[in-house]
Image (tube, rainbow, N blue to C red; front, side, top):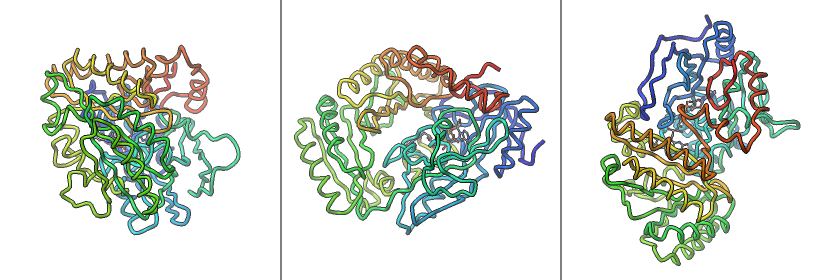
Length: 469
Ligand SMILES: Cc1cc2nc3c(=O)[nH]c(=O)nc-3n(C[C@H](O)[C@H](O)[C@H](O)COP(=O)(O)OP(=O)(O)OC[C@H]3O[C@@H](n4cnc5c(N)ncnc54)[C@H](O)[C@@H]3O)c2cc1C
């Protein structure tokens, strides 16, 4: 028995309607020492633990572990901002710290947070460990260092984060930070993240095009992507709907299935932002299928503007409006019971017109086959590649649930064949991600790390690194 509070439990509601996992209980540690005791005790009892931060892993499993018969370690009560350095712009946060909490602390300071378009009360730690995407950049680009409790009960820090919660910079020697991202080598008890200098001006560029001009649009995006300033926010191709007749009932009535959106926030001095905006406007105006073009000064956007919430995200202010409107609920605590379910399918696609076109075609074929819709987005995360975020909405009747899961399985198979591997996964597929790519990679050294850091294999079994225990 450890100092952390426990509850008995079975399984929890899940927006994605994955097969319910049998949960043996939930514990709520409040400190690194309590996490350490929980890990040591799990090693003794042999009952694995599945750590989560705020458990809003919607569309990928929510609060459910990968395997049955785990005990959930809910680190949500560890909600301290251990360090907030407003001179050089970084924070050290515990797993329960939410986007809302940190943003409120940053209000009126020279720094802002790279927020996601998801729930304001979702974590920074869990989202970053899953390689979530923020509005300004991928969350992984914010990650500086970690405090981790290993399966051996040892506490280590990475990335130059010292034992006192300070991080002067990246220090000499190997840095294992990324080994703890999308893995089960340890329980993360604190994370150092980089903040973004609050710019003088933020403009949100929002353009829509006919879907039939897609290749030309991607070409224009590539030109924009390569000509931009380093401080610009994330370029996205958004609101791209694939809707077979049988899948229509699950998508929002407002969806425009014949158009696509390109969006990018621009951050910096007014002169720099206006200069970049002019280049983008000229580039997009040469695309034949341009339907609309707006550049919004995010400090002055009216609250009733349909793009208002997006301008908040660009200013580093989280909001649940997107989630609530999209899922038809009045509080994020209802999301897992929303009338329309949602699955996520998340492959990586090279930033090239032919590849984006092929990815959309592959998805269309499977969506048609399973009579289920998809809402696609391509987040340009580097000059090379995009994170394809596919939300699969479905009616929560047995047939709707089955077709949505079949669609995700089939899409994953056909994307794997095409070389578009997942960049982020879900509880049904995490145990297979490494083995399914094994022909092209040697992952044995990763399994060796697992044996070293978690010899009893009690941390998050099945989460990417599968051990032979
Ligand atoms: C409408 C909608 C919009 C969304 N928008 C976005 C978006 O813009 N960007 C985005 O990235 N996602 C988005 N999501 C997906 C998801 O809701 C978010 O990524 C959310 O932040 C994840 O939940 P969380 O922060 O509570 O993480 P958690 O659920 O707590 O953690 C995620 C996973 O990380 C691991 N983990 C968590 N904490 C620890 C720890 N302390 N130690 C070890 N392992 C740990 C666990 O395996 C856990 O399952 C959206 C979802 C919906 C439905």
